[in-house]
Amino acid sequence: MYEYFWAATCKLRAAPALIAYLLFQPFAHAQSGCVNGYLNPQDTYSHNTASASTSPLPLKPGQPLGAVSYKVAGDTAAYTLDDFLGKFCTTGFLVLKDDQIVFERYLQGRKASDGLLSASMSKTVFALLMGIAINDGKLALTDRIGAVMPDFKDSAFADATVEDVLRMSSGVALNNSFDPGADSDNRATNPIVSPRQDVREYLRRKKELAAEAGTAFKYNGAQTALLGALMSQQVGPSLTAYLQDKVWVPMGAESRAYWIKNYRGEEGVQGQFVATLRDYARLGYLVMKQGSINGKEIVPASWIAKMTELRKDKPQPPNPPFYGLHIWIPQAAAGRAMFWGTNGQNIFIDPIARVVIVHTGNSPKAEFDGNRHLFPLRDAIVRSLAGAQQINVKTE
Image (cartoon, rainbow, N blue to C red; front, side):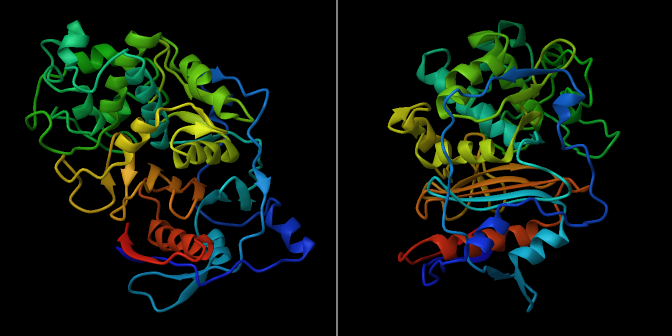
């Protein structure tokens, strides 16, 4: 837990044109032990494609981010953004202030056109689609799984509501592991790991409860896979096409996006979404703007508010960050939120400071070993961009 001073005693300093140029160039750092599986997986795996917009949302170059330093709890040393980028398995780092890019860098040979695997950031992309479907009357948060999916009436999921599952509190006994070869439900429903799985049938066969529905938080991507099966039933088999029509094109994405799918066509909504760094930033900007772009509502503002509301009366992880409707929420909520995936994938959204930070990585560890640095670095960047307002809060 870190002190989060949403202060703005630091002013952006004017930078020479050369510095501005250098900030936006691809730099190569020689981190060791990083993996390559997060780069352009659409070139290897079966997938559905969402087309780019013919009118991309401009992300204008802004005044470059000034020098940023931060400290890590229990460590007296001061670190810089460059220290971070050279130390951990980072592939991309982008900072928006409003709709302006103030920092953008690619590492390990990545470039702006590369598709970067989202890991569990995909869950939040998918949750935006669920909000649209709910607003359109395709389903409701109060729907019980057994009622809207009749083949699940005898499964352990039957009594859970859509909201229970979105909050990772279905109560179903599920095993979660990211270890290669582990017998886990999140891996069994992953189209990259288990491409021949019949996901709907696999989940329908779940009979064991670990808790009463809606009473305990237990994170597992298999719960998102269940919602994917439900959404495919309600809005059409291709959730990528739904994304294209409802979010990707209206948002103004500049590049194609992909959802990796298994041999049955079931998309990996729980973790296998692929997009460019800049389009991840546009997704963060969309959430920061309460679901609207240029005055046009794409995702209902009421859904964004519900997703990102910190509900302590609902099942939560034992420590922050907390969990909303398939989105992570810091202790300093107030609309702040993050998409969070394993191995170093994050989109941080701060609607108060009007800042979006995107980090992608290819760490060999599911629990990105740079998180201990990434969170205080995030806070330092927000402090430097927050303007004159000063709010002292704590976050994770």
